Image 1 (cartoon, rainbow, N blue to C red):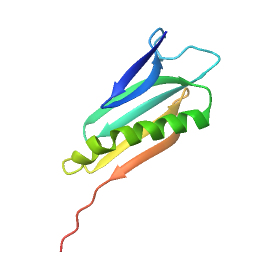
Image 2 (image 1 turned 120 degrees about the horizontal axis):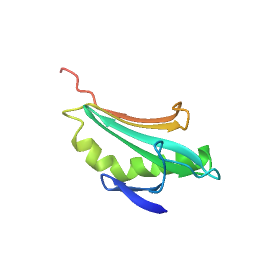
Image 3 (image 1 turned 90 degrees about the vertical axis):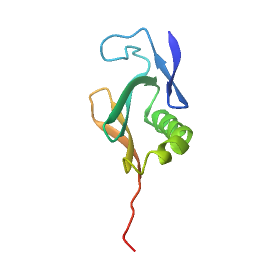
Length: 103
C-alpha cells in the first residue's frame, strides 16, 4: 500500500506494508531519506524505480523544506538530506550550511 508521508511540509511517497527495512517491492529500488539538522534525525524508506527518480524526489523534498530549514540554521548551521540505497551506501547528499564571519 502506498501512502504519503510528510517531512516538515514536504510529502514523500513510501510504502506502509513493508518489513523491517521498510521496502520489499522487487520491482522498485529501496532507498532511505535521512534528514539531519543538529541533534534531529529522521529516516524514511522510499520505493523508487531508479537512481534518477530518487535524485528528483530528493531534490523536490529539499525544495519543499528549504524555508523551514533556513529558519533553523542559526541554531544548527548544517542541514543534510542523505539518500542511501538498500545496502546503506550513500548515493546522494543534499546539504545546506550557514556561516557567520566576524567583521
